[in-house]
Length: 289
Picture 1 (cartoon, rainbow, N blue to C red):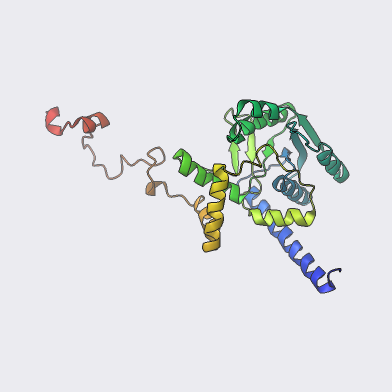
Picture 2 (picture 1 turned 45 degrees about the vertical axis):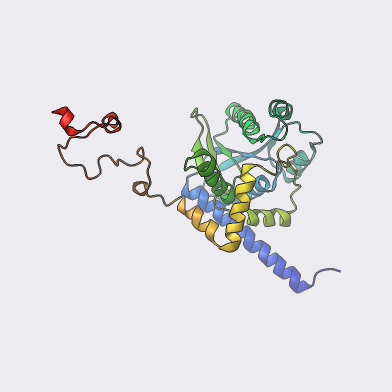
């Protein structure tokens, strides 16, 4: 039974609102962090998942009316996973007339050989994938590398680092690689995952599942994701509040001595200051007379 005209119109209206919201959020992120400049060649890293498809689609829609001219090339890394449908991405990109390149590198065999069964493969896999993408970018005049991480990825990474690494850091919307040769951008930084999933479904993107890590249900990231989902159910809007907090930092209210000079705070001019060894050794001012 086909949908009624009213239902069809409502669905079309909601889909249009969602598309407009995502375009606005991506455009805002690009503007806020100066992600794309005139003359850029943007390499959109396309995995075949909902996030990267959405990122590519939104960037293409913005490109037509952008205040600057920039080039887009979609790049996929074929990691030679068993039963990977190699034809899907080339067919999709060719049909849409999108410039693309497929990098073929058997990282799957390396990761599965090095990492014991049942252990998390993400760290090694991501390093090898990043290396291959960076090399292609360097060889082909790419000025910006676009990754499909969204708001919930960024928030989840923040808690992963806090809980398991003892540091307050996440995925910045824009960063420079350690060697200074590449600039990485995350245009979906302001976008919610559930919005992206709805958009991808409406667009009927040909999703390709990742068999390498998708079965690792006990990964720390999935534990954190469930925690955040539970918080959001109990307290709607909490995720957005926490996300905003990452852009509203008060260094003087934390404890990082590299970000704020606590030692000089309230110090008297000319006052003597004992060093760490003196404090730990129990020395006092009398010992220095």
